[in-house]
Length: 222
Image (cartoon, rainbow, N blue to C red; front, side, top):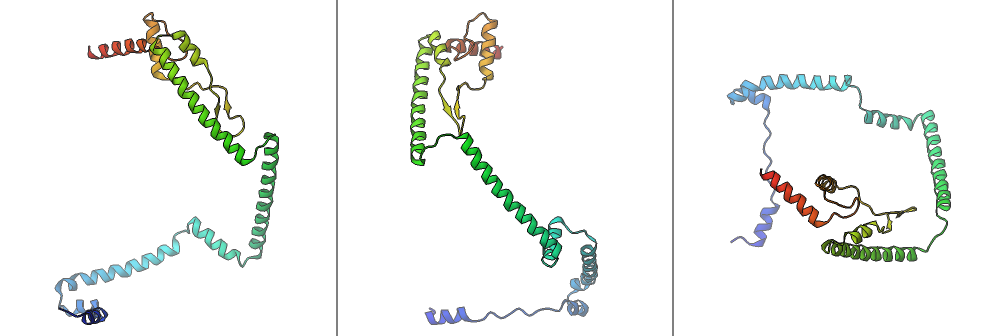
């Protein structure tokens, strides 16, 4: 079993370098027939590639990033470019100041009243909690009206608009009517074509939906 000292000595021992082979000499010596056969073609191709690479670098137009990098470097030594860049930087600074002034003025004109940040955050939190409660209660009573077939009540409930705040001024939406549901449109059209009365707006009675899907399933089996 090797001692710790011996292991450290083995780890610190230098690994001998692999001797480098002179491929030209080896190919000419004929000691490796395959290398002797292919190496001349390889060396000829390498010389051609080096020349072609230099030609490509010489004749290929520079890319846009390369041009910009070159101009930046030259600009450090070109008084005209340096002066123009200073003017551009000054204009950018002035524009930034103008935008800040306009933003401040617009905010003062658009928002007449303000609240401390803590009070505003509390107002948002209270609103979110209360709206969630109201939406859940409305969904529950609509389900009740639907099950009990109180369609006049259901239609009236669907007209109730729950204020919706999105962001910034004008965030209290006047209504909460979602976009038209293609399936609901199809059910209403089917009901009308079959002499079944359904409300123009709001929730479609569940029994009408059941009749529609039953007819649809029957037609699909035929």
